[in-house]
Length: 128
Image 1 (cartoon, rainbow, N blue to C red):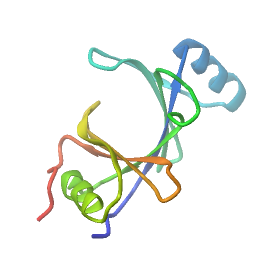
Image 2: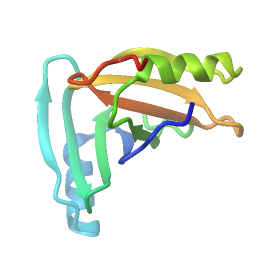
Image 3: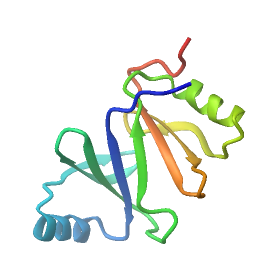
């Protein structure tokens, strides 16, 4: 099944949220918005145009787990999409799990890169 994607988010795991915010603001002109979430701690989000977001979460920034590319599913159906990938023999790294204001899942592309899907919790997780 072919899925429509309308936005990409690039997520960085960073050691220091404040340092990251200063660096990207001063050197790249990104105007981050800061969020404090009980489940996920503080994180940053900035938009580049209308279809690209950059987010930063406190975490281990070792190569291989950061940055992470996340494709948005504007029509929902994340459970169906991940089941379809698994049925095609694609490695599912993280099954559908809760994320801020929605759901995500990670899988590996043919070169072993971890790629993610995200959908809003306002959309159905299945497609019929």
